[in-house]
Amino acid sequence: MLKVSILSFSYLYNGIPADDSGNGGGFVFDCRFIENPGRYEEFRNLTGLDYKVSEFLNNQQSMQDFLNNVYSIIDAAIKNYTQRGFSNLMVSFGCTGGQHRSVYSAQKLSDYIAEKYPHIKTALNHCNLKV
Image 1 (cartoon, rainbow, N blue to C red):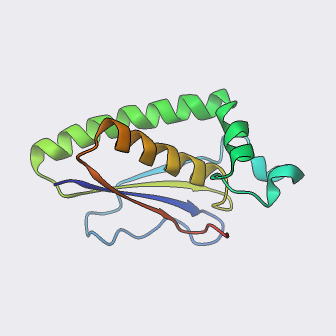
Image 2 (image 1 turned 90 degrees about the vertical axis):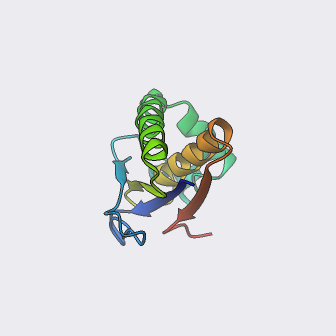
Image 3 (image 1 turned 90 degrees about the horizontal axis):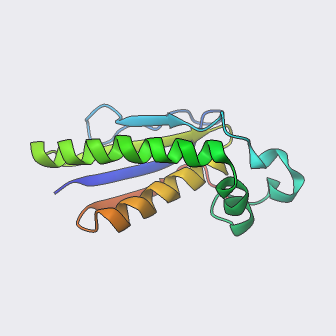
């Protein structure tokens, strides 16, 4: 059975997470091109899991386009990996501080997979989340 590991991380603090499955790291998506809520005082101490930040990012067309592209790539990978009997897929999202955009994106992908593929196990890890 396929397990999808989904991670958010900071390029600034720890860099791209290591792949402990031995498969070479999977997909790494860079969220830094999307407007950073962390640059606004009202969001600075919040995370991508907080309602206000989620609403801010929900309203960014660039974020929605990005996620739709990610979903398409991951749909193809899940189909392929399942057909080939693979057991691990790793998907990482990075942003500057690992608090807002990458956390939001990782959570959205986790929710998407849970809804579309209820038989697939996911593991979500926010590597740099300060809560």
